[in-house]
Image (cartoon, rainbow, N blue to C red):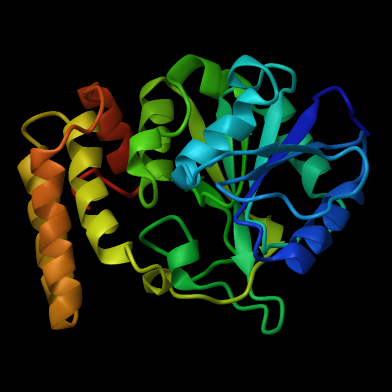
Length: 294
């Protein structure tokens, strides 16, 4: 059994799920191989009681999901350099198997171009994996592992060398699409992303629209994602396709109003630096089954 790669874990919390957080920490502590170092970030809230040896950072304000995770990354040194791999786990999730960290070590050691692994999320009661939790267009079979073009934010592992090369998550996004922004930058730098059905995070079935800001931020960040990362010729195509898809889903009047408000905000507000991907990356995404127009 290899123990060469150092593994850490970043967990952000609002402090409102102490029992779930403790169960998650216990599942991380039970991982095979060398101990997984853990940092829990209180995102604008105190951190509940945690076991001895778990480091904590308490932020005076909520920086959003990407901002909180970036603070967790830096707690492991610049770009997480104190470890080789970082697990990012939702605070109400749980690792049901003890070999997940070891499977990550083995996968990264076997493939030097593998940069990010997306875990399979399954409901702890039913075992069902929601279609939206399979990060590819052909999502009918969640038990099939494959190369993919994005990953799940609260159930993944990333090489810290990827973060050092392409940067962390986009702070300004706050919530929604921050994973795809990082994924596109990683793919543009030559890294690969895998979806692994055998690496499981238990998480209760939820709807993303439970967040009050969902529709506005999904639309705003979709525009930001395109403005930051896509060649100029593709930007209107990508956003036009997503406009049609949104209308086809027939959202409620208030949801549609919020969505269009976010869409406008995406065009009129700063989105961070623009670094359009290479055309060969567009082709790579296409060959991987998800051209950057959808």
